[in-house]
Length: 267
Image 1 (cartoon, rainbow, N blue to C red):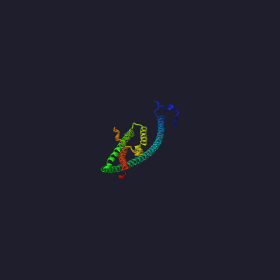
Image 2 (cartoon, rainbow, N blue to C red):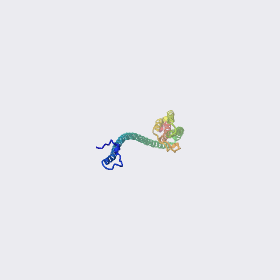
Image 3 (spheres, one colour):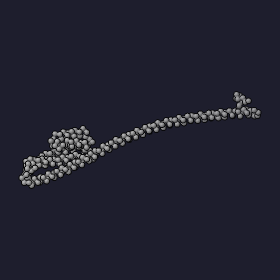
Image 4 (spheres, helix red, strand yellow):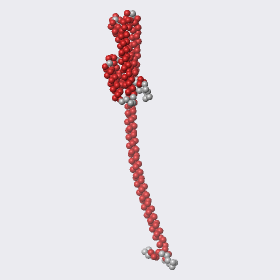
């Protein structure tokens, strides 16, 4: 057996050339090589284990991060879809509301046009009647006198309508303005309604209800660069023409009634 516990025997001496000294030299080289191989094997195994642990920890962290991101993405996607659905519903409601306003405005415009045509026909009939009365001789002078009185009434009525027109133009300008506060416009509308309730002509023409219709449905505004206030509004101008025709018609009816009252035989 080799005695590895005898270090001096590992050295090669000049006088040792033959015999068992060669075996000691071989063992002396083998032991360090085996130790180095064992160290490398242990170091390689430990390094592989550490690498495997780091890789497993990295995979675990990546799975956790990926799951968290996917969860947040799904939540965000669901929330965005919910918001988009809500906005689409609100947009559809606004479309229906605008369509309803537009249909109501078209219907009212058609109604006002029909009434205007009827007033025009009545006016033409009155003009024909006036011409007949003027040709009737005795009644002609009386009719002219009555008509002149009614012209004064018509002038006063047109003056009142002109005042309403000026205030309506200012009200529509306030509605279209992005600078004037809403309370200012509401105050103007309130003053117009009070004036219509107190003014006899306005009460006779039922202007209070017409004004409320204008305030509710006349949303027409000119472009943002517009400086002419009279280009704003649509429904209000139809009502103003309608009121003017009513005044003209009532003037002739008042004249006719006064004439028939003074000359009952003309009935």
